[in-house]
Image 1 (cartoon, rainbow, N blue to C red):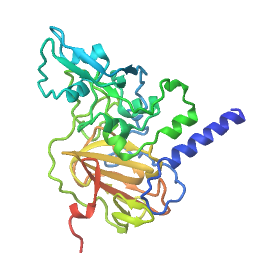
Image 2 (image 1 turned 180 degrees about the vertical axis):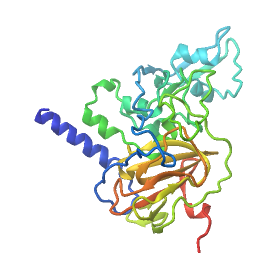
Image 3 (image 1 turned 120 degrees about the vertical axis):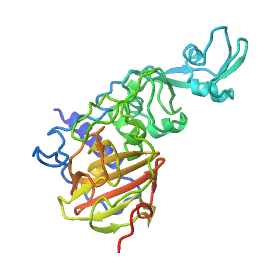
Image 4 (image 1 turned 90 degrees about the vertical axis):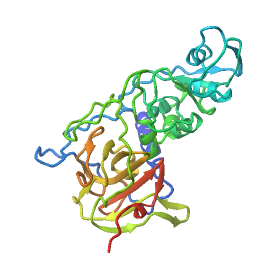
Amino acid sequence: MGSHMRQIAILILILGTTACIPPGRDTYAPPQAGPQLPTDPNVLGTAPDQAPPSTWQTSTVTVNAQQVESGIYIVQPGDTLRGIANKTGAGSQFIASANGLVDPYIIQPGQQLTISGGRYHTVNSGETGIAIARAYGAPWREVVALNALEEPYVLRVGQKLLLPATVPSDPASLSIEQRAAAFDLDIDDIVTGSQPALADGAAAKEPSDWRKAVTPNATIATPAGFTGRFQWPIDGTVISSFGSKGGGKVNDGLNIGVPKGTPIRASADGVIAYSGDEIGVFGGLILINHGSGWVTAYGHADTLNVTRGQKVKVGQVIGLAGDSGYVQEPQLHFEIRKNRKPVNPKIHLPKRS
């Protein structure tokens, strides 16, 4: 590799790392070695020796965004809202919103519909929100906000996503450095943008038995309703509490100091939404979707014992604590999120004496 390519590689590493450091953490050291996967088949919750790639790594995005001009469309006999969206290139949800249409979206021939302009990407089979955002060099959270996406955050084939105005007309013109600078990844991105798109009429796959891996291109069904009752995921001392730490720093969860190798347990029943180390600040990270907008996060793991799509029960071992990511001592970073917003875990955990 030439010196120029080495410089690019180093720049990408620096940008990718610094972009992942949330403004609200306490004190972070350089990242430790990434998490390991257990090889002993007798270990409870053993995952495959090689973790499957994330859903957005396996998703190839067709860059097909079209510029749509604002205007008026006259409804023709036989038109449907979806058909009008296909004709005009605008998203059907935006046409409905601009014209006060509600489900079942009844329209009449001769009716005048306002078409909202902008650049729209048409979702193809298997594409994930994160992969789409990366293809255009755009923050996924901005796409979520623009399109008012809601739980379970599963895209549909043919759906048209409005892209931020900052997206260049030719994404291929972006340099590697520009793409690295324009996109970062956080817990909320994974919660809202990691599911592969489904075809119309197709159903999401039911979660697997927790010992069986699920292929990355499978869309996983959201768990049924959840009451919001949690258990402590680990026994240890809280070394950093939830909330403001001064100087603009905020902790979105609890940091619990424990010896390296301490079992991490699922705080409630749910389905593994993510297990990997692609958010540098957290190192080994596990996300569990509990349904009803509840998600828990478990960071700095040394070992990941589960993979995406597996059902877990409260108290089940999902990994082993460590010092991966940006910490100086073994600990667990634990978060509870409701409707994408971090909440104080102590409010939802049993009181300790």
